[in-house]
Image 1 (cartoon, rainbow, N blue to C red):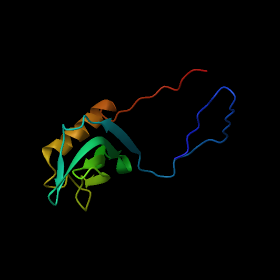
Image 2 (cartoon, rainbow, N blue to C red):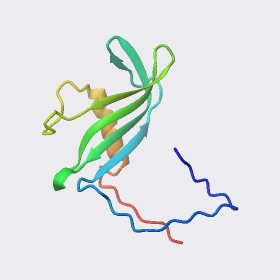
Image 3 (cartoon, rainbow, N blue to C red):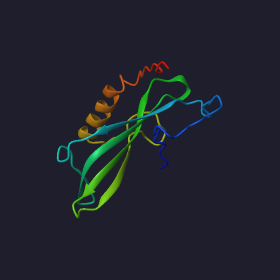
Image 4 (cartoon, rainbow, N blue to C red):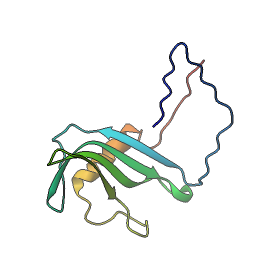
Amino acid sequence: MIAFPLESSMVLSATGDPIPTQSDPQVCVGVHLEVGTLVLTQDGTDYEPHHGRVEFAAPEGRPWAAEKVHFSAKASDGSFVGVEVDLLTEACDGPRPGIPEAVWKVVALAATSAGDVGITYTPPTA
């Protein structure tokens, strides 16, 4: 990751008029989670997420849908891992069966924090 800390002595310039390359709008929303409030268990290993990043998309003008959740978590052995949960069926025609209710709660938190994915934004005035 490259960060651009704009210190008083640093000058940043940018040119161009960015145009998205995809016809399907996508939004990622991050949610910080209090450690210990959610435990993911996979193949007998427990993971305690501290952050969830939910990917939303509106393909071909359809309503927004949550596609994936990426969790940053701590494993029971103390190591840090990433856990990804695919939320849609292979055909992307609905929710994947068997997704735990607690994961859907994380999706709801992300959707709420993004204005139910009806995100509005006003650029700052100069």
